[in-house]
Length: 94
Image 1 (tube, rainbow, N blue to C red):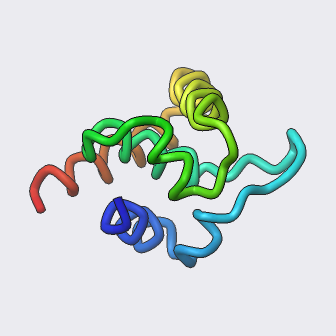
Image 2 (image 1 turned 180 degrees about the vertical axis):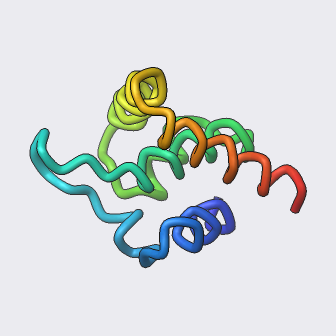
Image 3 (image 1 turned 120 degrees about the vertical axis):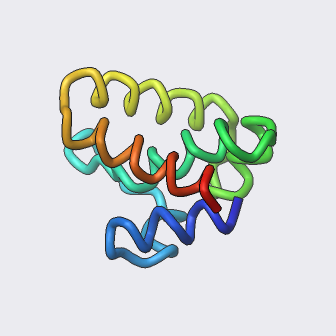
């Protein structure tokens, strides 16, 4: 899962720490974090609980909610959809 976070950080040009760290408030979506969580779910075979521990969340429901927010955003925003698909494809190639 750390490799996934690394590749997401490289794609967005941000630090891995910024992906691991939660932002508070509705006005602070952390799209790279949400994408990393989704890709960990899709590509790592780990449980939401283990993904949550990696991202420092106390409850696996938080991971589920973040992934749900991303799904809604992907449906509304082609740019985010393309970024998710690009990173996902890159991970498959690796």
